[in-house]
Amino acid sequence: MGLFIVWRCSLLLFSFFALYLLGGFLNPQKVNFLAALSSWDGGHFISIAQNGYQAPEQYAFFPLYPLLIRAFAPFFLENFKLTALFVSSFFSLLAIIFFQKLAKVDYKNGDVQKSIIFLLASPVAFFLAAAYSESLFIFLACASFYFSRSQKWGRAGVFASFASAAKPFGILLFIVLVFEYLKQKNFEVRKIGLNILLVFIAPLGLLFYMAFLKFKLGNAFFFIVSESNWQRQFIAFAPKVFFEKYLSVFSFENLGTRFFAQGALELFSVIFFILVLIYSLGRLRSTYLLYCFLLLVTALSTGVLTSFPRFFLLAFPLFFTFPDFCQNRLFERFLLYNFVLFQGLFLTLFLTGIWVA
Image (cartoon, rainbow, N blue to C red; front, side, top):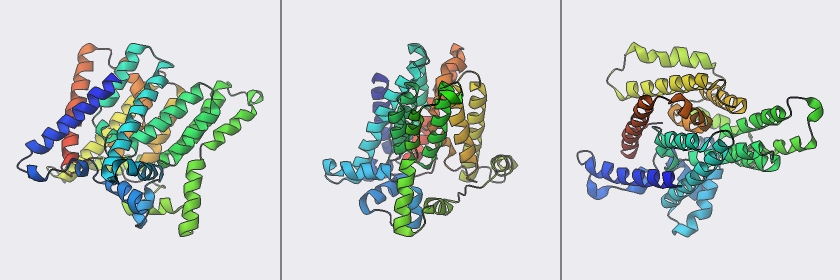
């Protein structure tokens, strides 16, 4: 709780000074904190909460987060931007609480605290406080994993089902929960009980959204069609995306432009994700490794990586290995300081309307 409060207050203060100190780019009299933290995807979530789905491209945004904004809006006098930021902050707190609970199942307190610090310091952690659904999804995924480790399969399935209504990646939890169940049974068929059926609750969130799409648009898979409006597909060959498209960064054709910087950030994020995932082999529970691997492959298979830096947050189990990864005190400080530095940089860019992830 203390780490969360320090992080949240630091973000608030940094956002205030970042906006006002950019006097050459912004008029301080017109600074709008709510708008700055609700830009890009946040604008679509808020629009859906206010008016429902209107444009074809909006169906790529899953409904749970907008529904929660709509539900809490009366408590904030129908100020949807303020409501969205409250919902994100509230669920980011719950996400950290369950991240801590989950980590304590396998790790000692000192390592758990370090994992939380690295998570909150990571370069794109500010998205947990913006009008995005990341904090909601991480909370639901953490809770689902936590209850699966406690063999409370009904609760694990319910939280996973909500996750599948929050983001398309939520469906991965169904696969992972089945694996975790079988792992706890030592993959012996004779030990499988009827309680495995509780795991099959996990896809219900997605199925309800698909039923809504079928009823309204006549196509239960329209959310996939909608992704094409964001240049995403779901048939790309992952290695081809990595080696052909993003290694083109090294051609330096756009050197010095925003496109080069964005491509370099995405490429570095993929490489860093893969390196941490490889390092985690044998150090992280196989269930979590499977989840992170599926997340990586799914993200690469969309054909674009415009949001990939943000996906590293969704692979939250990888942060469990950071205390072991940073046993050298000097390296730990180096990595942590760089995380904080880049979070400040990316937050500043985001607040000024520049796409980060």
